[in-house]
Figure 1 (tube, each protein chain N blue to C red):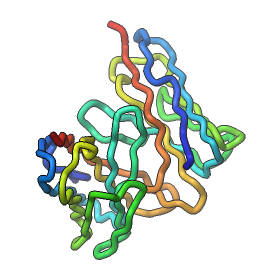
Figure 2: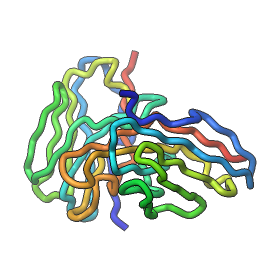
Figure 3: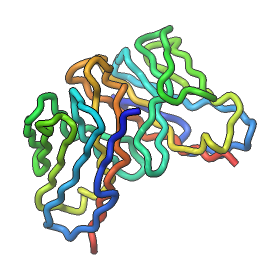
Figure 4: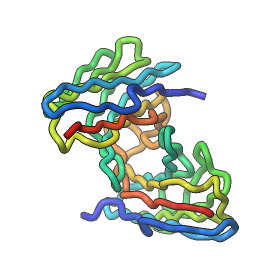
Length: 113
Length: 114
């Protein structure tokens, strides 16, 4: 079946640092999504990407839909304590519904005290 | 609006017991879905519904049943719990099945089967 590789699995960073994470797929996607999950809560959508090459920002977050349609990147600039959590990428195939996503295993962001 | 509400937040079951995980949404969304979240893996779709009275299987449906008698409610039933069903379960809803319509998730139910 289709697989998503999300890396890194976890990141220890200092407050104020920039963060980068990415997802790669074994096949192409029509849509890439980035979600964040805080402890004890469900995932919340951060950024949605619908076109190859698209670069979209949401505050300090910037995500890109890779040209090959097999990868996506999320960058967080000047991290702050509330950025802590698990970030998930998800892809949707052409023709699939919004609930039929392929999910990455997540990148856990931890800020060093 | 409360969004998507899941109950209970935590549950411990013995092998063979049955239970129902509740999910309700107040956004008038037609599309609802259930996922399980296991360590080191992405979310996996269990069952979904495209409207009241209509349900279908997702990627990992075995051992779970669903029904959708109203637009608001989409309960997930475990008929005979097994340790392999230990997981965190999320319910989600969305307004449209295609296009720019994000999934809205509940806060999850953490289930342990001993």
